[in-house]
Image (cartoon, rainbow, N blue to C red; front, top):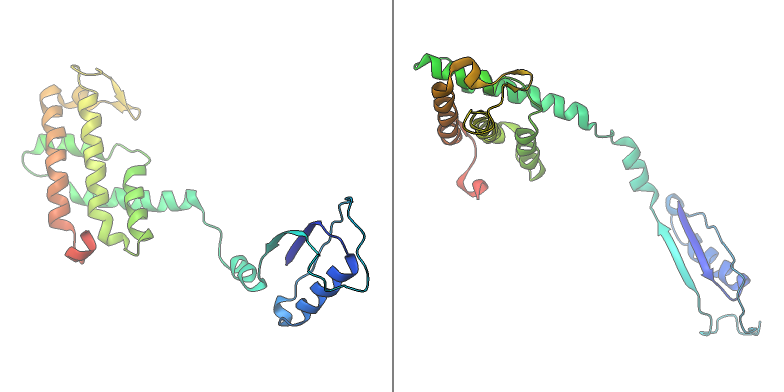
Amino acid sequence: MSAVNLNTWTHSNFMCNQVTTTATTRSRSRIPSFYFTKIPISVSPIKPSKPNSSSFSFSVSSLLTKQEPIEAEEQNPIFNFKSYMIEKATRVNKALDDAVSLREPLKVHEAMRYSLLAGGKRVRPVLCLAACELVGGTEPMAMPAACAVEMIHTMSLIHDDLPCMDNDDLRRGKPTNHKVFGEDVAVLAGDALLAFAFEHIAVSTVDVSPRECR
């Protein structure tokens, strides 16, 4: 549908004839419907003998939308942000669980997993995945980087909760890392997550050419 609002016009018959003539030359799928709003103004009379005179001046405010894009938009499903976040966060949690396994030194890796898998909205890794998809990439390409982002974020939380910093007792509704494993292990767990984040990107990223990384 096309809506045309004539702010000022000086000769209604001339305008209607001009618009009708133009509209009939278009294909049927694009024939617009016109709505006229006449705003009374003081104008000089125009001689009817010169309907095509160049003295006609008017201001047109229009919103032109073709029929085809409207139909295509109606066929596309509405983006559900909540569902997208839940779906991506679930996949990120699975990837984090697989990335940091229990191995020696066992207590440090337990502390790493405790804070890394303690929950959270996973906004940062999901944004990483979305940015990759936005420029034509795929989720598997960006998942190692997304996990690394969350590892670095978790490291900052572990160290921020330490007694020498904020000395917090709870994080995400659970006892903080140093409350469970001790301050010394919490420091090592945070440091290990920071270092492992870069290792994980280097080792686990596949099917991404150097050109795509730039």
